[in-house]
Length: 143
Image 1 (spheres, rainbow, N blue to C red):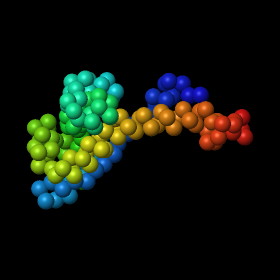
Image 2: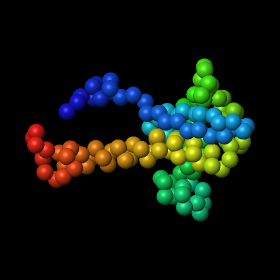
Image 3: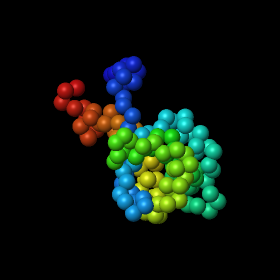
C-alpha cells in the first residue's frame, strides 16, 4: 500500500473540457477540480433553493451558484494560445451570454469534477479493495 507522500506525489489535478457556443463561435473551456475546502466553502455559502429538488438531491446546496463560483476559480479558455483566464466579471458575462444548454454543459463538467466523480472513484476503490481487485468477492489469484 502506498504511503501518503507517495500518493500525494503521484496525484495530478483532474481536468475536463467542455465546448460551448459563445458569441456564435465554439469556445473550449477547461476546468480543474478545486480543493475540497474551497468546494465546501462554496456549498456552505449557497444553500439550496427552496423547493428545488435538484439542489436537495445533489448535496443540499445551490448547484448553479456553486458551479458558477467554482468556474471562476479554475476555469480557462484553452482553444486559443495563450490560454485565457477570464476574470470573475467575465465569467458572470459568459454565463449570462450562454444558452441554457451551454450553462448545463459547464455545470455538468464542474460538478462531476468536484462532487460526482470523486464519489464514484471512492465507491469503485472500495469495491475493488473488497473484491481483491478482480470484481468478485474472492481474492485475486496473486493473493
